[in-house]
Every structure is written in C-alpha cells, then in structure tokens.
Length: 121
Image (cartoon, rainbow, N blue to C red):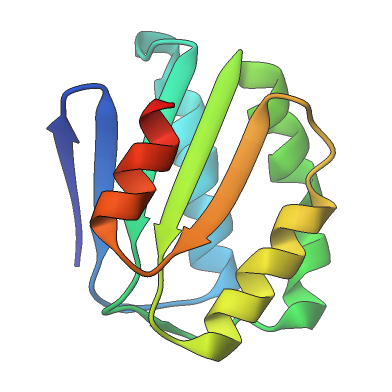
C-alpha cells in the first residue's frame, strides 16, 4: 500500500509493500505526468521503513532516464527518504551520487524530524 499526505509544504509518501525497480520507475513516471498540476518546487518525504524490495546496485542505472526527466521538470526537488535497513541505505546513498543535477537532491534519514528539518531549510 502507498499513501500520500500533505503536511504544510511537504508531501509525505508512505510505502508499506514490496516494490521492484519497475514499480519505482512506473511511480516516478506517473508523478512526472501528474506534475503539470504541481508546484515546480517539491519537497518529498518518503517513508520506506516498512517497505521491502529486491532493488540492487545493478538496477540503479535503470533510473538514469527518470532522473533526467525529474531534473528537467522541477526547479527544486528535495527528497528525504526514511530507512531503517543498512543495505537499502547504502543503495540509496549510491543512487544519490548518480544524480547529475544542481536542483534535485536526495538524502537518507532514520528519523522523520531530521528529514523534515533538512527539507525545509
């Protein structure tokens, strides 16, 4: 299950199911399609603490095209990801290094409060 909530200027997405790299790409593509009605400055908090996946390092190159689309679509895109698994944290940190944009940022957190502070500064 995926739920989306708005808290002030932060969109919070809770993912409570198993997802694959294809799910991630499909969700991002849908987000880009829906972005016509969204502000060009996006602050996202993704809670993936109850999410499981089979995404590995080999899958990260599949995200290059959607990363490019995201960086072209938004003037600012900050994504805070809540994780509690060291393997997923490492994969997410490597993914961050693959982003080639000066206005698309992703960072991993273990607490919602820390993620919210980073997003609003």
